[in-house]
Image (cartoon, rainbow, N blue to C red; front, side):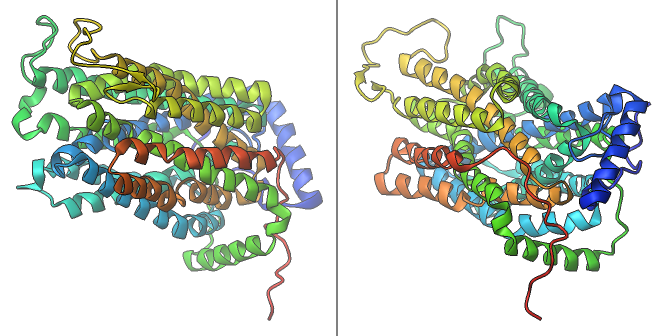
Length: 516
């Protein structure tokens, strides 16, 4: 039987020195008596059962469709091209929204992580953010074409900001659970499995939208296999078949969060009052800053991730917007594009786990980031009349590649091929980045350091999305604006040179050296 979510976990994370080592040994002894299903975790606590671990993985299945349906492939291009009415201006607004998200994460995440370390439990935080996201997703249904008769562009932008912030905060606590539910050697595998299963969820959600709404709305019934109109009476004239992406992602998130809440063990509450948690959390964050030299390796890693991760987020965020502006793809084409990438994203999670076991997390990250740079350069080199910057293509005289009504031009096929590579490398980098953090963060400060991890993943949004905004506006070109993220990827790749894959010193009980 799986251990209940509220079962006490041995607080190795709160112990240091001889007492911590003794407690860790005791947990190992308990684990050996209780069998392989409950081995010691990477933090010295009793690891979750397989049911608990798989339920943790399933939360990726719950939240990833939001990324595909809202953040990247369906709602984002619709917002830019139809709600705003101008893909370039829409890309600027979307960039600004994500810049604000980055500032919010930068200001709040480290404090939130430090405070929550004092409270102990993580699942209540996850549930709170899910309960904010679900109705916010549903509200996107009222994002009408031209912002007429529904929500204003400002209101929609605020919803997008709230969703992205809550998504990142939920990820903070979900990631922080990883080292306490799995053995050290299984962290990379479980992290990769989570990313892979998350992309399975995205694939299934996309298939539902594709066959239930997008294809019927375009009049393509696949020879009578599909209904001749979108399901549930969705009206294509008012883009209901597109706007349904918001409610679907919200319901999906609520439904598949349930296993995590039921079967993945949480840390026990410390019974610390909220006021005391805030006071002690802020105090610990100050001590962390004071002791920065003792954890400089973590700092170098977070700096590297701050750079390359924001570049990868931009690769995802602007893939659909860039394709709509460059090739004029409609909703069906965007979803087909997403579906074609899903097997590669799923494989990227498993490849990330394999790279981790083969080369370690640091080398795996370097391989993934370097490969991403090459593939992105290939993707932004594609336009309707040019391939790899130098190969001309005349769409007016070139014969269609096939009779299939989508992706008939060679540049479109090459663009998709580049993104298939990116789907693998970006997913692998995400998985290995989480693994690296779980292996080098002090066990007693896991929430705080995953707060810094969240900070490093979004704090440069004002730089990353700002760079895209600046270069798009300066050049009037989506190609140049999108290609500017190579600056961040390259800088992150170089910065990884100075990181080491080793556990940082636990400074949670370091002396307070502040002047009195």
